[in-house]
Amino acid sequence: MPDVPAASPEPRAAAAPVSSTALTALTAAGGRSVLDVHTADVGATRERQRLRRFVKITVAVWAVAGLLWARALTMGPGASFV
Image 1 (cartoon, rainbow, N blue to C red):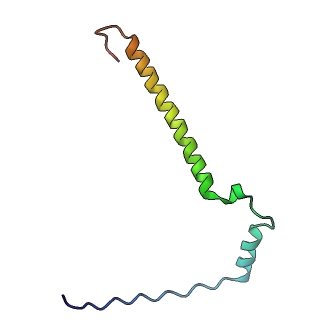
Image 2: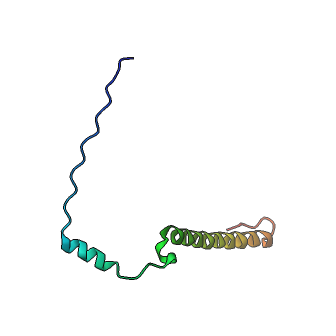
Image 3: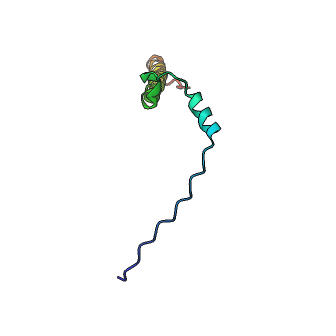
């Protein structure tokens, strides 16, 4: 197998200079208080919301399954399910 020279990484573009007014506006937007741990932890908040959605969907599916099961048990023999 012939030796293939490694490709050289492309040079990075220089970062755009940040104006002092943009930096001041950015730091002022944050406020002077420290974020609460519950607000700052985005991953935990996202996981709580995901779990809440999962529980709601699970309850809804089980409710529909229960209704269908009850209907199947109370149907007469030979009756159409629909």
